[in-house]
Length: 422
Image (cartoon, rainbow, N blue to C red; front, side, top):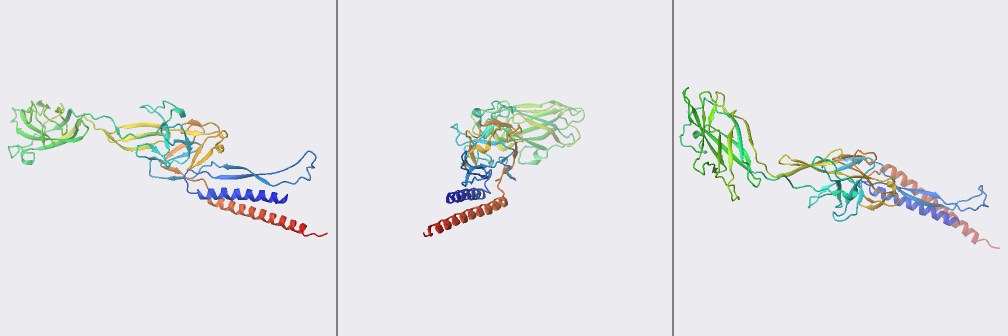
C-alpha cells in the first residue's frame, strides 16, 4: 500500500513542478495570471476505525487555482495600451460577426487593416455605444460594439466667404510700377493670404494684393485696388468683367465703398461648376497712419478631417481627434467581472471564458465598484514573481525527491520480505 502512497506524492509533486514551470515560462506574458497547485490528504476510514490509529493513503491534487492578483504595470507610448487597476477584464470578440466573447487582462491593443482596435491575437475590443455627448446608450454585453476608428470626420464645406479686418496705411505711397503684376513687388504695396477650401475639401490658398491708386489731398477720397488670386487664377467679378476690386476711403480713413465683392468665375481643379466667393472687408477696416495690418481674418469653408489621434480617459471613454478640429466620442470601454474569477477556463493567449464555476459575466464601466479603473499608456505585466517561483520550485523538487526515497524504501522492504526463507 505504501507504494501507492508514495506514487500519489510523486504525481502531486510532478503536477506542482509543471505548474511552477508554466508560471516561469510566462513571466514575460502580458496579462498572464499565475496558478498555484493545492493538495489534499487522502484518508480511508470506517466507523469502526479508531481515530488514533488512522493512516493516510497519500495525497491528491485538489485544485490548480489561478491567482488573479494585480501584475505590475509598464508604461508605454501608445494611447491604445490599457491596463486595469482592479479586478475587471476586457471583453474581446475573435470575430465581429460572431457572438463569442473572450475575456483578457492583456490590454496591448492596436489598429488592424480594417481600422478595428484589436489585441495581439486579433480579438476586437468591445465598448459601449455612446451618443454625440458621450452618454452610454446601451449597457449590456449583447449590445456591445467592436471599437472601430473612423478615417475621417465631417463633410467638406466649400468656402463662399472670406472676411478681413484691415488697416491700410494712410502714409503709403503709390506703387512705382503702375502696371500690376503679382510677381513685381513694386506694383503693389502689401499682400495677405488665407487658406480656403473647394467643394472636395481640398485646401487652396487665396492671396490678395493691395495697390494704392490715389491719395487724398484732405478733401478728396483715397482709393485702393485689390487683386485676388487662387493659385495662378486671378479672381474676377461681374462674370469676368472686373479683374480687381476698388476700395474707397474718405479723408478721415473711413471705408466708404468697395468693401465687398463677389468673385463668380472661379472653377476649382476637377470641378465642373464655378465656386462663388465673396471677399468682404469688415466695417472696422480703416485707413489711418498706422502701418498696414490684418487684425482679423476668417473664412466659412471646412475640409474633411483626417484622423490624427485617439485617447482613452480614466473613465474608459475613447475619443478620436481629427485634423479639422473635430473630436468624436467613439465608445466607452466595457469592463467585465465575475463572482469567482478562479473558475474561469483558460484558453491560452491570455484569454479566459466563463464557466458554471466562475458565474455569469457582469458588465460595467471603469470606476464602478468591483470593475477597477483604466490606465492608458500602460500595459499590465505577468503577476509571476520569479524569486517566489524559484523557491517553490526547490520545495517541489525536494518533495519529489522525498517521495522517490519513500518509494525506494518501500521497494527495499518488499525485497527483504521476498528474501526471507523458511
